[in-house]
Length: 307
Image (cartoon, rainbow, N blue to C red; front, side, top):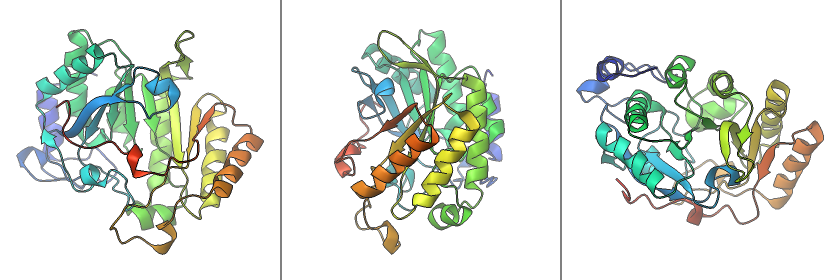
């Protein structure tokens, strides 16, 4: 879909882009649940080397971190930008230039991190950039609390979807993100993403992904049952037509009052049991993380680089 400035204005006057449907008049300066007005803001644009190997490759993923978030999990590791709104206003013309600059630096792809609340603005900038020579794959990196009707605006623009599937239990998603309907909305969103891309396509020479879906699931302390339900759902729904990335990097944010169960990292034994379960149910296309990923050092500095 070709997004126009008029369409952006109309969508921002009464925002229902995400399942929160907060109806904020973001066009005239009101902030939505996401914490953002219609003015697109970002916190960093740079080459990023810590995604899955088929995304980062050897040259890095051209990652743009957007300010704000429509989900806002209480343990968010990017809380300074997602919850606290740190960032800089970026005109849409400038965003298109940033995409092209990342391509010129050798980025394997353009990686849009937490983009849903700026979806029409980003679509507009992507179209501008593509008209000016943007040719690398576009990655949509999301917490998956998305509306299918919004994602359909991206059909034909996004090559790779990199969604989280965070919670199966409505009690957990309510407790940690005030989003009791998270699984329902995320499952529908991932189905739409798969409809748009189909099964994965990798470049045989470089091993880089050109098209497809990688669903990420980050284990939470003490919730093996929820993780198993998520993995079983994904394998039942998609078999090995998607990749599944099972992550052990949960890091309790410092100086945040968290529930007791979230005040520790994942143990090696917990992670090993989930990996064994994934293998047992037949998940073949997947990624796992090495030890030592539960560190703040894996969170990039949000310093307005590249903006």
